[in-house]
Structures are given as C-alpha cells and as structure tokens.
Amino acid sequence: MDILGSKEYLERMLAAPRPGAGQVLAFYEHRIGAVCKDPELMLMPWDDHLVHRGDGVFETIKWVDGRVYLLDEHLARMGRSGKAIGLEPPCPWEEVREIVLEIGRATGVDKGLFRMLLGRGPGGFGIDPSECPTPSLYIAAYQYTPKPAAFYEKGVTAFRTSIPAKQSYLATIKSIDYLPNVLMKKEAAAKGKDFPVCFDAQDFLAEGATENIALVDASGCICVPNLNNALSGTTLLRVLELAKGEIAHCYKAISEADIAVANEMIVLGTTAQCISIVEYNGKPVGDGKPGPVSKRLLELLKKDLVEYGVAL
Image (cartoon, rainbow, N blue to C red; front, side, top):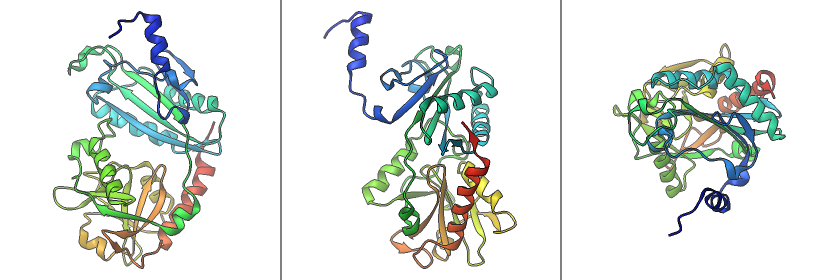
C-alpha cells in the first residue's frame, strides 16, 4: 500500500469517484467561510462527531422560481433540534440565514434544495462532546426536480412498515441519525410501494420516512396524529394554518381502524408537498382517487410559495 505525501494524496482524493457530484450546485463549510461550486471539494473531517456519532441535526429547505419556502420556519426548527441536544451554530442564526441565501444566489438556478448540517464539530473519535471545541456547519445546495402533475393526479401507494416509530424524545428532534428512516425507505422499495408509514408502541400512526401523514375523516376534518412520536413538519403546520377557517383539523390518536374508514390519506412534506395516498396495505383509501381536500391543500401550498417565499 502506498504511503503518500500531501500533494499526492490530494491528487488521488480529487480523482476518486464521486457518485452524485453532478447534483451539487454549491456548498459552504463554516471553517472555510466561503462558497464553492466544485463538488469534488465537498468534504468534511472524519473526526467530526456529526460523522461517526450522528451527533448533529439537519434541515432540508427548497427554493422554486427563486423563492425559498419556509426558510425561517426551518431555521427555527433547526434551532429547537439543536437546543434539545445542547448544540448551537458557530455563528448567529441571522448569519446562517444570510449564508443560505448567498449559496442559493451563487447557484445561478431558479430551483433547488438546501441541505443544512449542524454538527458537534471535529476534535476526536470519542463520544464525549467536550472533544469538539467548535460546532460545525455545512450547507449544500443541490438539484431539485419537482414531481410532475400526473404524480398528484394519480396518487400514491403506502403500507405499514415493519420499522417502529422512534422513541418520543428522538422522534421530535430532526437529528442526523436517520437509520430507521432509511430502513423504512428500503423496505418500501423492496415492496414496490411509494411511501412507508410507521406506528408507535401503542399501535397509533406516527409518520412516514421523511413526511407527515394525515387523514381526512367522513366529516371532512383533517386528522393529524398526535406528534408525540413524529416530527412537527414545517409543511404540515403551514398548510394547517393556510386552511384555517376553510377546513377543520384536529390532533388525535389514529389507529388502523381510522385509516380503513378515512375519506382521504395524505402525505405532507417539503418535496412531496401534498399527495393523496390512494392505496394503503393493498386496499383503496376512500374511493381510491385523490380527494378534494388534498387537492385544495396542494393549491394553497403552491400559492403560498409564491406569496410567502423569501426571494434569493
């Protein structure tokens, strides 16, 4: 095995295969303090506890037609997640907000996704957070292809995954540790279904792999699972606010029996927006077609992105 000097190692590292590099538009690391557009240089220290301990939190934010959607809501949730594990960014949140916008402007494209990673920082391979003198902040902008209209018109399939919901204190933190979510998605792919749905220890509906799930009951009310074992989705909370006064909603424990008699079952998330689940566990939901509530919520979200989105 070769033992390389710095120059030779750097040359070999930059020549190494980098799957997905074509999706990266621009990125930022706080230690460097600048934006770069060469994905081959998008690297992080191995001894960052974010990497080898999952000690960190993250957010995914989208921009469409040059408008960043729910930017402040995502930053606020990241702040809450960080606070829950005793982690603050290496700079003020106002500066983080401006960095996100600067990265978006640097891409030169009108739509994309931001992946924000806030970690304990580099400093060692142990588990003690005190190893890390300064938190890490990584922000990448990458390509986003919105789903075609036909996707919403047809609806999607879902099933009950074998992976249980996370423990309450973890489920409400958007931590880097997404292994259960990964396994849910892997199971969905193996079964040929679009979305997995998990349940908690009391056998109540929790959430999807990366989305919130809600029902529409016979009265037309949007029924949202109690968010004890699920993340409070920014899209979910925003669309409930937009629909206030037009469509009623409630929070409740939702069982399999409730799903069986629901008029609609809905997926809500940053990239999914609002999609009807028309088949659950091999059986139709409602009449097996996208329902009026999901269609209306999608309209509200699209309109809100234009009116409420933050311009790059």
